[in-house]
Picture 1 (cartoon, rainbow, N blue to C red):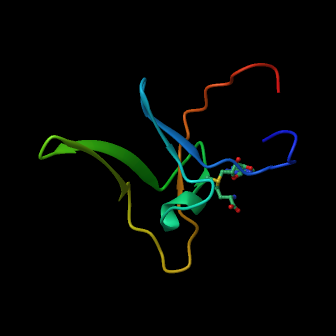
Picture 2 (cartoon, helix red, strand yellow):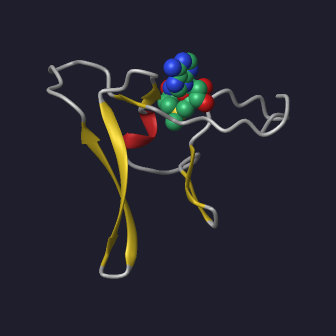
Length: 79
Ligand SMILES: C[S@@+](CC[C@H](N)C(=O)[O-])C[C@H]1O[C@@H](n2cnc3c(N)ncnc32)[C@H](O)[C@@H]1O
């Protein structure tokens, strides 16, 4: 990815053995940016034995307002 000069990353670690990679394909939630004061949060549910991930509002959100959530960054390496 570094070699191809990607600057936006679309990886979401759901659990220690599950990562959603929305680099090439995904729903609109792939465009939600990070904020330390987010207006949404991500919740992980188990429905009929399957893992589901949902984005839920933390407060009223105005029409046209950017959606954000806290990525809870984990840095791998210096770059
Ligand atoms: C899941 S994508 C979010 C959508 C992306 N901004 C886009 O335009 O496609 C994650 C990437 O967006 C950028 N990003 C997300 N939140 C940011 C922020 N608060 N400040 C600067 N860049 C951010 C980073 O490049 C990150 O790798």
